Image 1 (cartoon, helix red, strand yellow):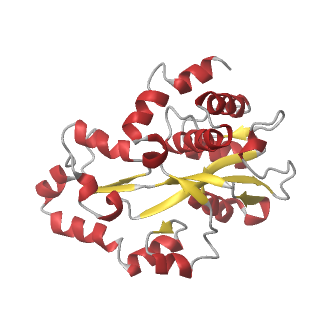
Image 2: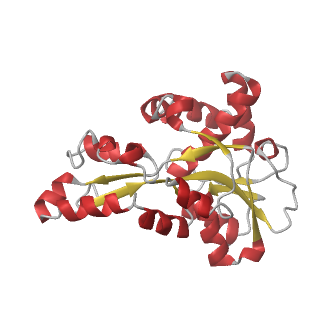
Image 3: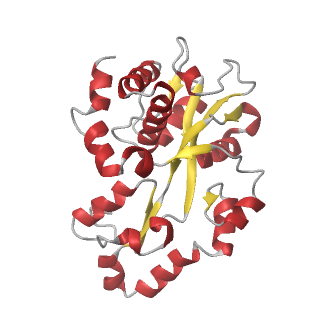
Amino acid sequence: MANGLEADVVTFNQAPDVDFLVKNGGLVAANWREKFPNGASPYTTTTIFLVRKGNPKGIKDWDDLAKPGIKVIVPNPKTSGNGRYTYLAAWGYALRKTGSEDGAREFVRKLFANVPVLDGGGRGATTTFTQRDTGDVLVTFENEAAGIGAEFGADKFEVVYPNLSIEAEPSVAVVDKYVDKHGTRKLAEAYLNFLYTPEGQAIIAKHNLRPRDETVLKANAAKFPQVETFTVEKQFGGWDKVQKQHFADGGIYDQIAVGQ
């Protein structure tokens, strides 16, 4: 969109993608998080494991992904939001378990040593796991797992929920430059506000994303098992800090990848 596609609204699985539109061309207002509830995030999802039917490798939690002989499929954290969430979920888990940054680094190093191929995005990783039959476990978003089951057959895979995971908070924003150009600001704002209504939240739940509305979430409890989660903001101090520390060129992820 930054290259010319004139969208009136955007939604991304991580806030830095919206911030990119703020910094590049001023397409979105700098205070976009304040425009809608929950920091302009009307729903959430979480990182889970998708294993082959019967879970032949007995994968139950993050520790299993770092064991020798386990092949883990995950997209590249340098190019994929899904991959970054996976990396941070593993780091947060290990940080809690070991109590140290060094322990987290070593755990994530072991996990990524088990990744046979780093696809550029979530779709590529899904193809590698489901159609190329590569890997023992695909680490992906909860809503993606439901879609994979529908597309390739629920009888082929099982979802495993780790004891601790990360809460992904997809962001929405009005693209100010284009709604003003198109004269669609009221319609665009009305659409995004609708996502927060009970009706909108029910539609969100139908599509396997976790609604913010507690009543709607409770009504869909069978679809969304309880799992302890942490957020990028509370665990890591926000995306700006994470980007500089972990994913910038020469950052911790690069250091881990070079050392493999």
